Amino acid sequence: MKRFLVIIALTLLALTTIAGKNETKAKNNVSLADQRKAEYIFIEAQNQKMKGNFDAFHDLLVYAHEIDPGNTAISFYMGMCLLKMNNTTKERAERALTLMKEHFEAQPEDLYETTFYSDANMQLGHPDEALRALKVLNEHNPNRLELQVRLAEAYSQSGDYVQSNATYDSIATLFGSSIQITSSKIDNYMAMNDSTGALREMRAMLATAPQNDTYNIAMSSLFQHYGMNDSALYYLDRAQEYAPDNGYIYLARAEYYNMAGDSIGYEQQIYNALTAEQLDVDSKLGVLLGYIRQRLAAEDTTQRINNLFTVLIQQHPHEAKIHQLYSEYFYTKKDFKGAIEQLGYSLDVNPTDADGWRNMVILNMMDDNYADAVKASEKALEYNPDNLDLYGYVAGCYHQMEEYDKAIETYQKILTLVDSTDLERQSELITGMGDTYSEMGDTAKTVECYERALELDPVNSGALNNYAYYLAQRGEDLDRAERMAAIAVKDDPENANFIDTYAWVYFAKKDYTKALLYIKSAVEKDESNHLLEHYGDILWFNDEKDAAVEQWTKALEEDPDNELLQRKVKNKTYYEE
Image 1 (cartoon, helix red, strand yellow):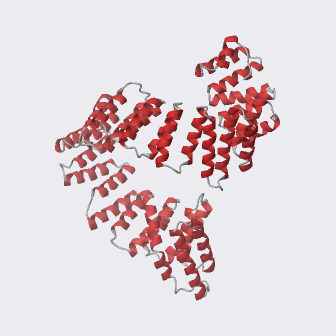
Image 2 (cartoon, rainbow, N blue to C red):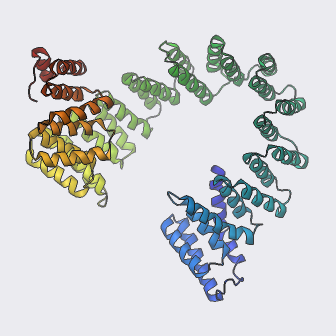
Image 3 (cartoon, one colour):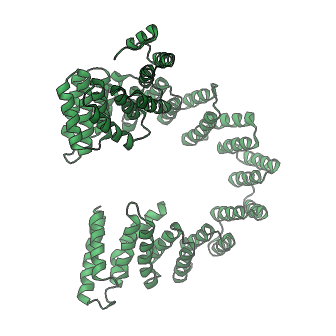
């Protein structure tokens, strides 16, 4: 993909030159004046592309092509533009290839355009045409190393491994062999299940430098791939003998023991790799990340991972990346306090890490440390002053802290920063204000905010859901609440809170059968205490009293300070919220 993008950039640099090649060619009875007019428009399209005005680039190309459809340079870039459009359909992609092919047939020697055309065909499932284009290009540009390498790669991608290796042999004859060529040939042999050819190629390379540790490691890996473990270990030992200070040999040994199923040997080599002074920090982190993934997959609950992190931190106490990875590890275990602590160490080392501060905000919110989240937000905003999401986190934190005036003040501040045309964002913020006013008991402002939010964005599912729940709680306008809740669920059918609202609307309407149907669906997706309490309430009115108490009890375990739940469980009876 990276090479693909480079080619795009290079082709754009060649635009003017290509246009010149077509200037004197009259095609399809287009007048010379129209040809020149089309080229002027083409050059302006190029200028708009360079400025990032892609819509103008496309429109000008279309106009230029309409004026002079015989200008193959314009056709080529029309095709390129079609390929780069969002949600390109199969038909549009094929049309793009047809347009680019016009230029290829007219100017096959053009290096960048033909290369791009070949790549596009390969990516779109036309390997034969991709190969044809590269072969023609090689004929026009003989003995160019990069083109011959691309041709060999194209043969391999199309499954013609024999011809690919033959091309690599030609490259080696012209330019000399290299480890890259040998590695590519070995890959081809392996794709053909030709172990003899792969090992022969590897031995030939090793013979050029028998004491090269990298070659010996590669030979070991190849033997292990074919199940020849004794030979694999022999070459690993040779590599270590020739380069005893090479920390990467520990990685190769770790992989050897891992594939051989020797967990004790694997653990030891992982430890050796992490303590090797010659191995750089990024490599060590890669080792540790792979090890962590393996242990998490095995549901390992021992202290081994923590011990390895301790070793690594002792070696590199001021390396922020290590603390970041440790924080991510704690996060995967839902140990938010541990994640916060390690991220704090990372930010001490690198206090300008904007993403780190944003993550600190989120972690504190997940751990219900809203005051600390606000403090982290203030720090994060020093480095992300225009980040509206951070301001939104602050407003949400104040809401959770029941500092409702500050929450409203923050929402109002964000609204002054939002683009006046961004109606969706405005609607979301005003929904948040409505939620806050609801907690404050301000009925008029709650309704005003929800109505305004839906006026700005009638399909705002969050506003529809929250407004529906608010009406259900008050027993007001329940038919409208039902319609709003239904739209929200249709928009996000996997959202347990939306389904819960739909159930609660039916509960408010005393349609307990439907309420039970939807609350069961909600609880299947999320067993939070709020949903479990509703489940118990609805079960109670479906005359399933014991089951209701069971759900209230489960909810109380999640929220032991909830006085209403305490009363329901203690007295085994329903009480209104």
